[in-house]
Image (cartoon, rainbow, N blue to C red; front, side, top):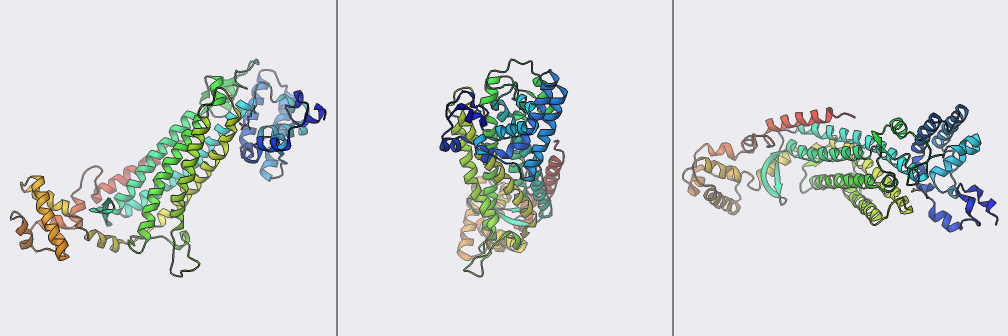
Length: 467
Ligand code: ARG
C-alpha cells in the first residue's frame, strides 16, 4: 500500500503502510472524547481569531473557519456528524470535516498548536463547565436541606454515638450537620476550579511554537484567568482532573453516609422518616416492600467514584514529561465521575426536601435509652458534685432503670434521691427532652434557637456565592 492511502490520516505523510485495524481501534478515543466537541470548537475559534490577529490567517480564511466550525457544531448538536474511528479522536474528526467543508483554510487552523495543548485546553473547558453545573445543583441541595432544617428545629430525636442512643438532639441540627459536610465539599470544588482555570493553549506539542502567538488573547477569549506558565507542564499534567475526582470521592463519601442514615431511618425498626413513593421501588416477590433505592444507589456509587480517583492517580504516576498517550486514559474516569456526581446530587436535591419526618416516632425513640443521663450528671455538677462522682450516681440510676424498665424521667423523686440526696424537684426540668436540647444553647449546639440561627447563617452562605 502506498503512503498516499494513508492521506486520510492527518499525520499520514511519513507512513508507508496503513494502521493495523485493531491498533486503529485500540488507539482511538473518538468514541468517548466526542463529548468535548463543543469545547474543541470553542478552542479552535479562539485560536483562529488569534492567528488572524498575528497575520497567519486573512479575513476570508477566518470567516470560512468560523462558518465551517458553526456548521460542524450544528451537525454535532443535531447528531448528524459522521464520527470516524479512522480519524482517531474528536480533534482530528473536526479538523478533517472543516477542511472538507471549507478547503485549504481548514488546513491552516492547526498552525502553531498541537493536539497536546488542544486536548489539555478542551478538558479544562469541559470540566470547568461541568463544575459550574454541579455547583448549581449543590446550591439546590443545600437550600433544600437548610429549609428542611428550619422547619425541623423543634423536632426531637435521639442523637447517636456508636449508633447507640446518646443525647437528644433536634432533627434540624442533624440536617445542618449534613449541610456542613456539603459546604466544605463545595469549597473544595471551587478550589479545584480556580486552579484549573489557566489556558494551556500555545504550549503546542511540548515546547511552545515559533509563531508570534498571543497566549493572553486566547486565554481571555476562553474565559481563563491567565495562560499557564510552562509549556511542558501544560500538556502533561492532569492534576486538575485528579483534584476534581478527589473532591468527588469526598462528596460521595458524605452522600453515602447520608444515604446510610436515610436507609436506616426508613426501615420498620427505626421508622423515623418516610420517603415519597416516587423515590422508591417495590419488590417483585414481597408485596409489602417499599425499598429506598435512591439512597441505596447513591451509597453504592461511591465505589466507582473512588475507583476513578485511584485510576487517575495511577495513570499519572511515573509519567515522564511531557505528553504521553497514557493521558488519553484520563477521559473515561473523569467523564464518568462528572456524570455520577451530577446524577447523585440531582437525586438528593429532588428527594431530601420531600422527606416526611415521623415526629412522634422520633420523640418516642429519644425517650428510650436514657438519653438525658448526661443532663442529670450536669445537674448534679451544678449542685456541687465533682463530675466523676455525678457520673457514678447517674450510672446507678440508669442501672435501676434497666432493671425496672423505667426512664430517668419516669422515676419518682424519692427513688432519685436514693442515689443522691441533693436531687430536688427541679431535676425533672432537665430530664425532659425539651429541657435537654434547650440547655445546649451555644454556637454549634442543638438548642432550637441555635439551630434556627445556624440555618439562617447557612442560607446566607449559599446565597452569597459569587459565580
Ligand atoms: N486523543 C488524544 C488524548 O486524548 C489527543 C492528544 C494526542 N496527541 C498525540 N500526539 N497523539 O490525549
